[in-house]
Structure formats: C-alpha cells, structure tokens
Length: 136
Image (cartoon, rainbow, N blue to C red; front, side):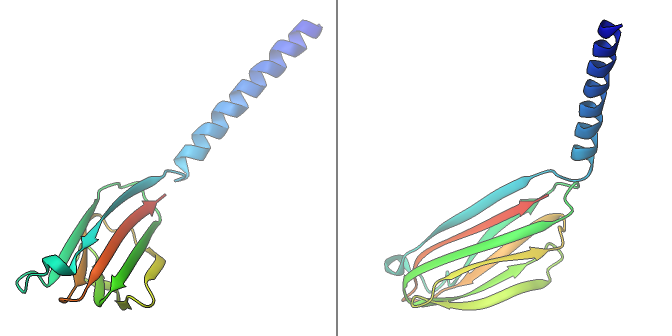
C-alpha cells in the first residue's frame, strides 16, 4: 500500500511540474535581447556624414513587451538622438550634451521590422553610444 501511494505521489508531482512548465512558457515569459552601438570620433568628422544610423531588426512574433535602452556617453560636444519605429513613426527624441550623458529605458509596442536610431552629430561630437532592445 505504501508503494502505491509513493508511486501515485511521484507521478502527480511529475505531471504538476510538466503542466507548470507548459503554462510558464506559453504565457510569454520569453526573453529577447539584441544590441548595437559604436564610437563617434570628432577627428573623423565628415560634413557628408552628419547623421549616423543604427538599426535593429525585431522579428519575434512572441513578444508582448519591448524595452529600448539607450546609452550615450560623450566626452565632448553634443548630439541629437531620434528613435523610429518600423512604420517610420518617431517614438523618442532628445538632445544630449557631454556634460550630462544619457541613459534611458522606455517600454514601447513590440512592432516587428527594422527600428532605426539616428544620431545627428557635429564636428565636436566625440564619444560612444549603445542601443539595446529587450523583450518578453
């Protein structure tokens, strides 16, 4: 009799764990992460390249939430930063100076397609930028 109770209890635990796993993963607890970035050098400034573009492709249909983190660290000059959704809509913009720097995370609709960040620089802009997308 004790053996039967032990087997039944063990089987019940296995079934509960399996069901919990299925429910956990089907509820969107899925993690997506990608980033891009680069350096900006005042010494390499070219009048024809006043706008630096950085793109990130979001192609995961399971996303329910999308968090966009932007990090800009300038040691001289300033820049204007804009973020565009795949449909071309401007979703965020700001001006960053070397005195402040910039670190920000916003939650946005997880539109599929190519997101574009534009960095409008000048001859004094010098520093680095990182753009990170995380979703679940």
